[in-house]
Image (cartoon, rainbow, N blue to C red; front, side, top):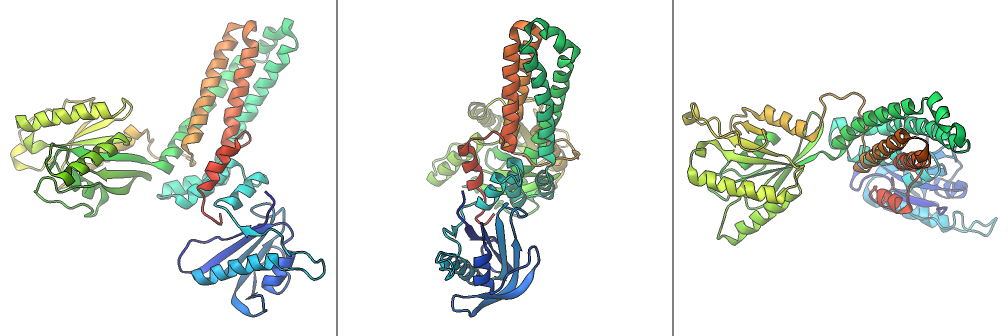
Length: 472
């Protein structure tokens, strides 16, 4: 990957300032063609950006970062112009044109092969040139995409290398343990005594404890990044749309006494202690002859099947209506069929504000103890629901030093934990299993290295960087 690249590095649309970025080897010729002069390294220079005929296209700041002291590790030029989409596209086209311009002295193009960058290609070059590791590269995209303040702070910690340092610390401890085991394989008559004197068992136990601690923080970071998807389900007129509006603090869904008002899903992301919660209101679940409503109900079941948690909303004012409860039983059976055992279903009894219910005793014992009573109208009980959602998601209140993480990081940490448990079993069996012990430790190290990109397939890199913005 040596072709020089260029792209608009700011978001589409109008703004006060927009940036065009160029990265590649030997940018001095292109700099003189576009800026009309040489630039001092890492010094902002206000000047006119020159068109092919020497006329001014715009005026702004130019910054030059010579290799290797740049984001990508290559020569980098950043042109800060006015942020109109037309001028930025003209400036990008001018850079591409200048790259193909023939230098009279050498008879060659000023910057041969200059092309528009692919999504994430600047960050990918930074990774390939050892300016950042893979976890830090992913943190760049996560910082841009952060939907909450807590997620942004966690991504910033990961970008600063906090997560990577944890992984490197585990790797170093694992390498030291591998060294001890590998050394014993050359001296089979002394291997067990050697490992006992070196306290290999103690080192392995300590390593397992550290892995669990890091995995716990990584799981919290994955929650900050991805959040949880919560689907509100139930019969018509149970108050699903009212609950969505109450949680969101805005009138997002239409609320009427008419059954079947909601025909399609209504989604909104809210924050609970910095964790993004994607709440989806769905059509009321019932038998219907209305074709449009039936489509809405089918979509509701589809969303339920993809949920991380389901709020099964029930109407407390109808808690003693046999027909209503019978329909609820059918919905419970459908939820059991649609959901895996790992997806929690919170039974929420709504309309606790109804005056006639002051002495009622609704059947709240159904399910696995995850029943709540609230009023979407008055807001009573909403705080308890929010805390229940966080608890079921595995969130720890006010965690210290959480860094952003991804599902693949958590999966890699689980793989490390699995291989270390297998290594423990082989160590306990004695000398006849030392080669298997060494192999499990090697696999654990590979799983760790996959997080930071020291051991990653090209396919994985392609998937990760293809989801970045162009120009990043």
